Image (cartoon, rainbow, N blue to C red; front, top):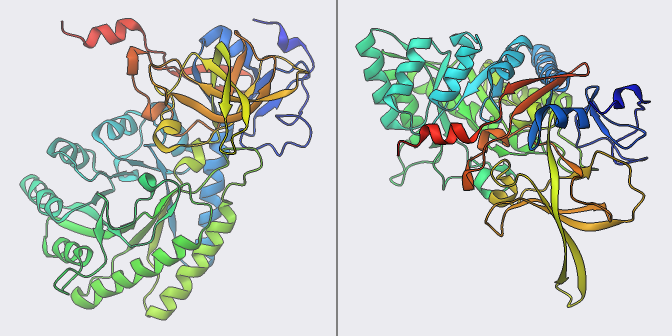
Amino acid sequence: MTGAAEETTTALPVGGPGHPGAPWSSGVRRREDGALEVAGADVRDLVAQHGTPAYVLDEADFRARARAYRTAFETAFAEVGTGVDVYYAGKALLTVAVARWAREEGLRVDTASGGELAVALRAGVPGEAIGLHGNNKSDAELHAALDAGVGRIIVDSLVEVERLADLAGARGTVAPVMVRVTTGVHAGGHEYISTAHEDQKFGLSVSSGPDGGDSPALEALLAVVARPELHLLGIHSHIGSQILDPTGFEVAARVVLQLRADVAARTGVLVEEVDLGGGYGIAYLPGEVALDPDRVAKDVASAVTAIGAELGTPLPRFSIEPGRAIVGPAGLTLYTVGTVKPVAVTGDDGATFTRLYVSVDGGMSDNIRPALYGADYHAEVVGRVSDAEPVLARVVGKHCESGDIVVHRVMLPGDVRAGDLLAVAATGAYGRSMASNYNLLTRPPVVAVADGGSRVLVRRETVDDLLALDQG
């Protein structure tokens, strides 16, 4: 212990006076001695106990964000006369404890693999509160979903419709099915994470086929209705990720509700649920503003009410998937600084400037998003006060890759040095869940903090863990 717990703690905004608070969790405070606290826990104590790198998760912040989304959508949709379910996106970060938190706050859990499904079940999430996604589900995964009685299996192709019907029929059961469709609306960040445009692997297009016949989406919906082993629960749409403007949801909702009406006209079946996906954006950098749950809930509820009135169809029950918006801001990653190296760089204008390369004891193995997507993050020295003038820095990892970048550009104190503690904000989503053992680095632990204490949710990997898989 550093003894810091005995010193004065003040609610200084992170980054100094005038900092808006984003992109850190609500439980983050800067102490007068310069150290960061997360939910009352001094980061120096966390590092002494758990080491670095380490993923740190603010439990109260996670729970508050989950409640905020559930309350906002339940209130807004109740006012227009229908219900809504909020699904926590397991792919962002799923541990047994995280799944329990989500469920305790009234959320359902969306899974995208047999492994994620197993974690949700281990956490005690009932099958009917779980969804299973995936564009290429194995028979084993479909069997596991049927065994667990999952509330919805989101089919992603015509082939999967027939496979699932055959598997359910052989078991003498009826599988609840949603059909994932691509609406042609895509929004949000990098091309690779915008998942509703036509030229990609997910879903079935609502556009007519090349011969002018039924669209693949309508064809799949009709195929589900035709199979008695399947119950057509609804239609699923997802338009992208890191979305900061709710307009795209409204446009996609019109397409999906029209498709729902088309199915009813052809079959007499008016599906009972529509999932409008998620991908709600968060603040990754100081000054950025996240998508507001109340705003998006009210805007989408108003839009679907108007669309339903135009189509003359009663509103279905809705579901949404806030994605990273719940867990992303609740997390940060702690690193220890190693090598610090000034590098002369020539800019596009021909002028030369110095960029400080600050190496930490992790890297692209614990956060692949900067290398994969060019994603931006914010970092600060969090273990001490510094009066040094800030300098332009790039935070890099220890991997054998020039693209091993943790933070592309950030102003850090000019006296940053080996042994300093560095925190990167808003890493709760897609850090641990996309982590690897590249260069045979071991993956960091996931540490939950609450009320000044900490506990390990997922332990740090060891070299023995790596060797245990190697059969020689």
